[in-house]
Amino acid sequence: MTSKQRVVVGLSGGVDSAVSAHLLKEQGYEVVGIFMKNWEDDDDSAYCSSRQDWLDAASVADVLGIEIEHVNFAAEYKDRVFAEFLREHLAGRTPNPDVLCNAEIKFKAFLDHAVRLGAEKIATGHYARVRHNESRDRYELLKGLDALKDQSYFLHRLNQAQLGQTLFPVGELPKTEVRRIAAQIGLPNAKKKDSTGICFIGERPFRDFLNRYIAKEPGPIKDPHGRIIGQHVGLSFYTLGQRQGLGIGGVKKMTAPPHPETDGLHLPWFVARKDMQNNTLWVVQGHNHACLLSSALHAQDASWVAGQVPTAVDLSAKTRYRQTDAPCRFEAEGEPGFALRFAAPQWAVTPGQSAVLYDGEVCLGGGVIRSALGGD
View 1 (tube, rainbow, N blue to C red):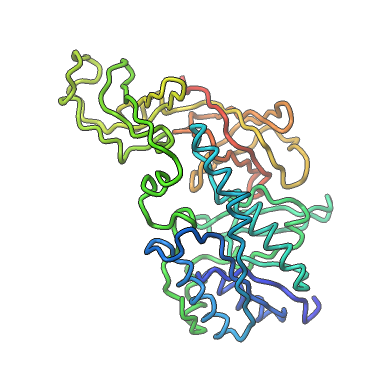
View 2: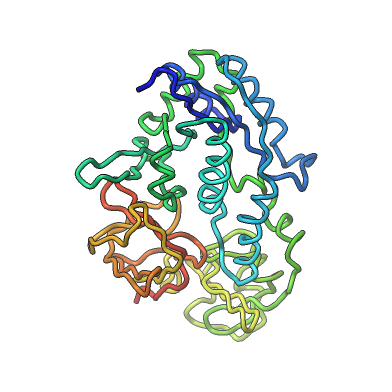
């Protein structure tokens, strides 16, 4: 390695990116930090932490003795990520903006900006790894070694050019070690709480945020027998498998005729289906109700890390982050789509979310779920 190879690190204000910058500096790189501002609609809100994050990132840069630049990508974020986020919700799906943010902002707009600064590589604090496969002469995206923190799911849309210019310094470490290093070198954010949720929503109530952009269209909530048991505020505000915020009491409060299969039971209610045509939210009782299980799915808008459709058939997949890899059969369908058939039914497979494929520790890519088949 050239001792002064320039690497631009995305400093978020969090501990992972801070330790990433430290590790790179220790390895002899010339490290420059960039703080990305991706949202500014309510920058003065109690829920928007970008101002504090910037102060934390600047403090880290000061301790590490590196330069840092504040870059505003809010316009790009709104055009490339947030607009799609709203379109998907209006269509009744549940998008994952973090996946699109990585592909369009952190590893596109940010990468382009870093190259203009003379960077040969960029780095982030993601828990993932990049490996160059010599025999196939291509880069592979690997899971982070800390299985509880692995973020390859959110990075599955990265391509060969992006991976070839990217470093993930903490991908080789457990989170506990990252915290230890941060404390040892005196980083001001060593004990900072990990960020949760979507970056532009923060810790605020999701429904309150979405209501600023999508009008409420109330309609009936029905159980599997067609009985109206409540009213929803608008289908865009719910997701499959949702339990909280349904506003449904118990079956005792219903005025419909009793049904022997459900009445008297006190199992929690879950969203099972969103009928956009009839503006109806269908719910079922019990976490393991058959209506919440799917044996197969169809996905579109596929993106493959290697730049080509996988040739293997027996793979594993995640249909949501933090899910255990589920064995499945892969079948390409009318490029760029595919189908997955699972060995065991999967819970609450949700249109709009990403189905991400793995071959062991290698993340192959994935696509956007469009439909699922029941688990019967």
